[in-house]
Image 1: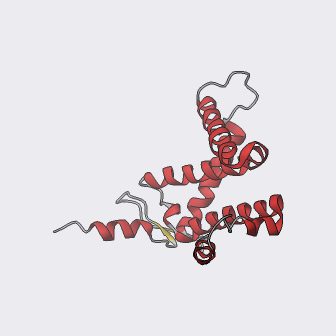
Image 2: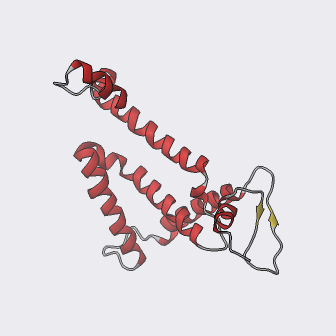
Image 3: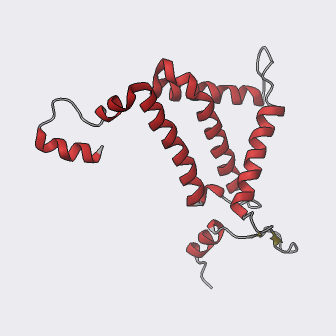
Length: 173
């Protein structure tokens, strides 16, 4: 009997109303109707993020140690290299809490997906699409707020571009 890798992967990506644990003696757990398996993983991931930063992370330590030191180094990396590096000195610190929340939420969801008891919630296109849509809305409205609507539209038109090529470039932008 050959191992069907495609069906094995697709079985783990399907969103169902049952939670199949990898133990042969445990029957599938039926979930209530509005909660699917991926929604349950989202709730569990959000619970772990809240638990981590409200109860485990010791913000008031003068010198962070252990797990707090790891989280602090990741937060500083996100702030300095991602937020300030990409958005600038003015807007970077304002977007750092959002980027940190998104980073740790996706990190925990992906790590949970590697554990056989849990399901990979980020394999659901609805979840990744929702996270991407929220980020897109933040970025577009942030750019409109900072530059104005006319300035926002001007970013799509590079200066010095020949007119025939300008139609192609504006469409691609």
